[in-house]
Length: 199
Image 1: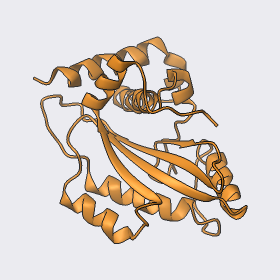
Image 2: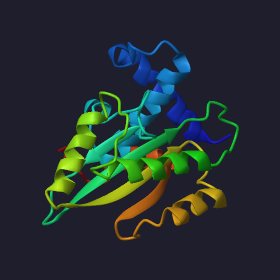
Image 3: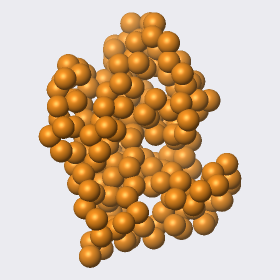
């Protein structure tokens, strides 16, 4: 038994129970827990409060494969963007890889979101963030993108690497990282995430 998986499982159950208004539009309990897992992951990774992390969530219909997005502060001619894609597995005894098709969706999202001239169908949470990104790009700023693939299991398999390689993104501009239950617990124990300022 992996203790950290169960710790995270209990934690997301408590997030749902303590904040019913965050999940009021979701009828399915499993979907509530999946969203809570993304909120917890964003909070731990960025080192921000749960409330702030909740405001970065973009998952739902027409989310372009993006569950949460964080736009950092401008730095000279660059601006950092962190994209989260979360996959929660409910069978805590199962060790599954981050799905390759989710990597493919994120690759597609980057190609769409960061092209100011490409039409893309977006939900109400994602639309203003994409508009802000495209506005900055149109003003001549260069995005540096970090894709955080979060699950309560293992990293992606070779097929996922193939999707990343085939995308042809410059390695100094787009990076993919795996982040899981063990990383979350470690950051919660340290009580400090990757330092970031909410924009």
